[in-house]
Length: 474
Image (cartoon, rainbow, N blue to C red; front, side):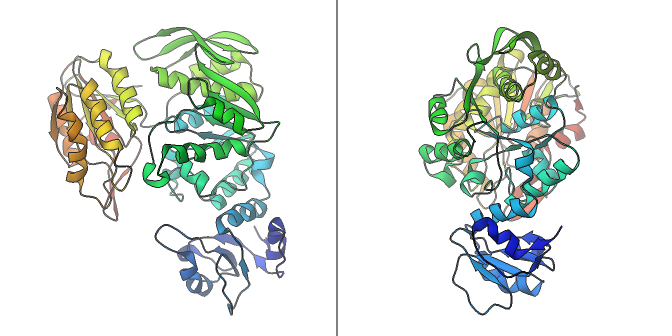
């Protein structure tokens, strides 16, 4: 794919010379000949310092924010290079999200599950989830940089897809990675404490989520969890049509709920009618996720009967309530729960299903420290035995992180140990558990690496359990 610099800069209302552009890059190490290079300012590095390397590797032009002169290639100065990158990326790939029905999912917990379910419910739907971002080695953790989003949307369009659903993280929204992505539907799941190391306050965190809804068109849909105390804020922020979903209330809601050991039956009620439905996984939080997906599917025209049929055949993403049977007759459950609210919800779900409930968990380093005692409090309230371990400590001392978690555990009656080697912690819990017990391994879910210092060390909770002889249950 190739175009010219002057054609791309028209998106910004700027003039530029007619230089052929073959690709887009924001990492000087990845520049190819003919690329347009964006000098992004990061939290630690400034892309302007790497302009010489980008030009040396063949960059045909550069977009940046600083005043720079005497470059051997065209330089375009803009007030906001990230916003410019989003608009230019959309133009470079032919505005694919405008041609697809594009759905953004935001919220503290449930984003991956809702996007994953929509990928199963909607026909010819492309889903971009946190799991896919990791598997394909894309930039960032949940929401990739704008050129990758636009490329993936263009590829989906070329393959005949009609829908494109992706997770809109609060950090991705604030960092303007979604500029140029034209959403038709926004979905909000919930809001609880997370990422305060980045946002600073819950108010700023909420404002970040609202950015998705501010961008929705008047002929779009705002799908919001009616149980959230922030629902009215989301509706007042957007021009899109409001759709409330929820358990036992809303426009799309669940009535006559019957919870089984590992499934949930309910009546799916929509403005277009109601139908008996089932999801093959338990938990009120997962039912809310299914209703969020159902509400978005109803908004684009699927019948209640078709939605119910596809929910019945749906599955949760990898590492979300993933069950394995241990050699000694216990269950092991791997879940991504990495916030206090999510950990509490999963423990609360498993508590009545377990003779004894074990939990292996930690908290990330270089992140919101206020979550750590809250994670310990959740474990102390519901578990019988807790093993505190490492969870992507990065540059922090794992022992210090564990000590902050243990403060609340010590105030409870739960028995606990500290084992900072995560693989050994998992083995210890499996060895202690017996028939009727459940071992919850929380925090990393699908992840395949443990981030320690500056290294990404291969690690998978699921693989650890399989090596101990545990077998995944269908």
